[in-house]
Length: 403
Image (cartoon, rainbow, N blue to C red; front, top):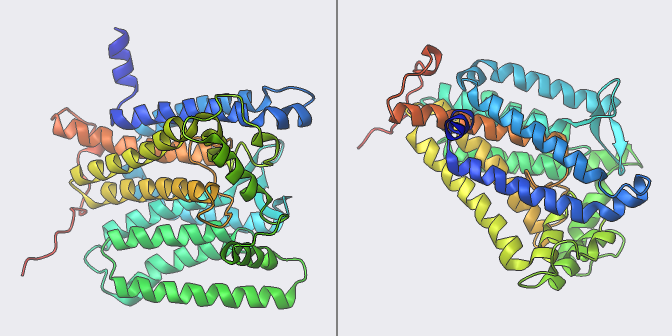
């Protein structure tokens, strides 16, 4: 009876469910260990503050994954435009009324609560759904440059432009992620190269204008991070966290110092979020920390591609690929920053770092992927599905004509 209940509750790709459990275990262990000092200092000696907070968020995220996995993914096709408009509106509100933390305005405080919504995380997922929907709907017209510009690049440009003033790294990540999705969706490479060139010019012009019109801006921060990274002579103030992360990784070695034995957690201000990967390596080492997590994200990518290949229609395939790319790109970007192979970006490690909006949106994304896998698996087993999940009208996967 128990086995039947578990099978009915946790539907969809079992490998992905296993990865969710793995990420949650790493998250609880690493967040607790990395945040003991910060919690003791900031929360009246309560060393379990962040552990309890993350445990509650993970329970909530598990509920979100289960609920979303049971929703018919077809609704995202219909609501993609609304999601995009709402997310753009939230970004505008953040620029105007957002809370300023660590010299950046990236959060919108929900009235009547102390919950801070990082609206760029919401916009990122909304944009992926929009791109999946539009690629599926117009897959036979992707050589029309004006159509691609209007339906694909203008939404990407608007979202990135609203995020860029306060969070350049996230805007660049979203743009790069969008280019990968469009490339997979068969948008001509020459178009993508042209858009990338336009984006580079746009960022440079924006930085110049911002420098001229304002003395208090983040252009100097961007410039210093890039210069310090490529010069090989990092500034102690600007790259303090990156340096401490390198020390954590170097002292962790192959097998780590053992859980709870980190010393660099007391030196890293973002030890439980942006640089949690460094603390995991310090405590668990290369063999029990870094390699298992890297393999976990690679397996997640592989399972996503496998699910997409089984889809009979374009939208669910593009939806799964888009969401998987979003998760994996962010994960590897976070890990590259932690090991010093990329400038500091401020990206969290998906489903592992301490957080709120990021955890919730990643949970929604995994739930949507599981929703597609649930339907695909049921069709392969020829199980009876609700009427609205049986077909996707007019969205058969496009196969190029053979010469």
